Image 1 (cartoon, rainbow, N blue to C red):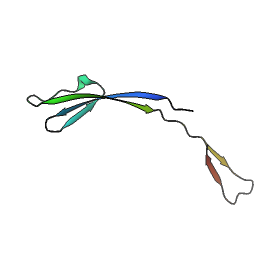
Image 2 (image 1 turned 120 degrees about the horizontal axis):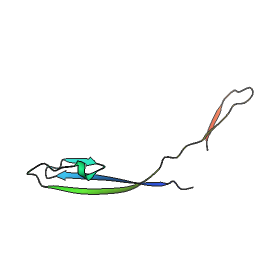
Image 3 (image 1 turned 90 degrees about the horizontal axis):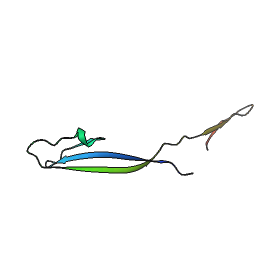
Image 4 (image 1 turned 180 degrees about the vertical axis):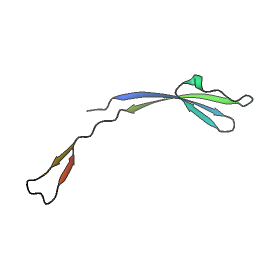
Length: 70
């Protein structure tokens, strides 16, 4: 079974000093006046988290227990 992928999009504003800001919305970023800058959009496909099922077994008279990841 393959995980569902979610597209994540972020905007990065980098100025000539190497400083940067990151936002989900390009409109939230504004270059400082007088500095050269560049805006970059990054898209990444990220798998959604998947639930992990744990199965425990307890014996009638347990000396030890066991936990398995399924």
